[in-house]
Length: 448
Picture 1 (cartoon, rainbow, N blue to C red):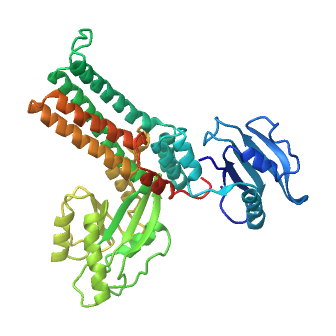
Picture 2 (picture 1 turned 135 degrees about the vertical axis):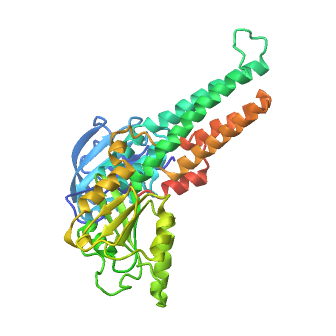
Picture 3 (picture 1 turned 90 degrees about the horizontal axis):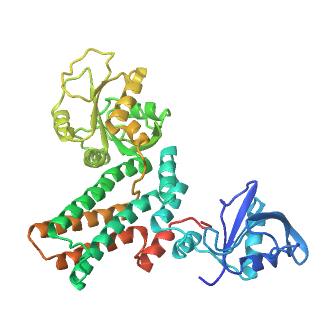
């Protein structure tokens, strides 16, 4: 990381301003080569300075230049940010001049990668930056900010500190038995400490289930036979005519999707093909996809026709969804009722008349306890990589607990406990493989 990198940090296109970011030991000297007032080495750090970008004594643009000297910067290196007028030609020209004068074009995510490798942030904080950029709701933004502040990292660091104290005690007891002032760690003591650590790890895993709901929302599948009101419900929830609605059976042959924001949480709503026996090849594939979604969706909205008796397919689906998150919608309540069914999650609606939509939203809110999630401390792990590692650590702790019950010597248990400590280190990037780091930061946008 001896070279100096540069990239455009704002979105490409026409706008009021564009920002070009430069990081590296020579960043100030390089920018000094392309400005009219060549005094950037003399200005105070963390200041904004008016200047002109020039080429062959001709002005390219009127700019504001932020100077930030190491080590108190994002990358811990010298950083310069050029705020120029927005526009593709002007921005690209300034970037071109920087490269001609000694900069290298940054790779995607390279600024954040340097911040990580230079110890400015850990791996969880680095990942939270991308989550913050991608945040679709206020809650997902709050979650990313919590992780960016290091709150989640502290949970992992505290666990590692507890484990390292246990490891140190074991090593001293084994290697230096003559030190009588060091308390001997017994199997009974170790059992208690492993129980405490196990409870903490499993609580983080449990709480982190909420992170998927906050970041990605919940997948909601609308299921039912043809012409029961599935597409109408999708359109009402989305408040647009997304799906085609007709009286002809089999109109919806494939999956139609849309998103809504419910109390700050995203619902990924999927309208499926009507479930029925059909000889139409395309429609048959759609029906098969509908049945598969019952297994994958976080929530099933199963619509029944209030004016029609249950058929065998509907009875089978009722059995399939009884142990899953589900809401049974009895539609067309403006007609005589022929449905007799018992379930705690029933909403009666007349979708076409806009009756029951608010009741449905409130029921979804209750099922997933959105209000409680919002009030909780959002100190969660937020990505599959870190959650998978934490589950791996939990399994290893369970293995240690089992070995304790089998009276395995502490000297052997130390090896497994050290592995847990290393797994937790992988979560925050204390140990990492270069290939993993390159792959992770390659997903970032250019200039970040």
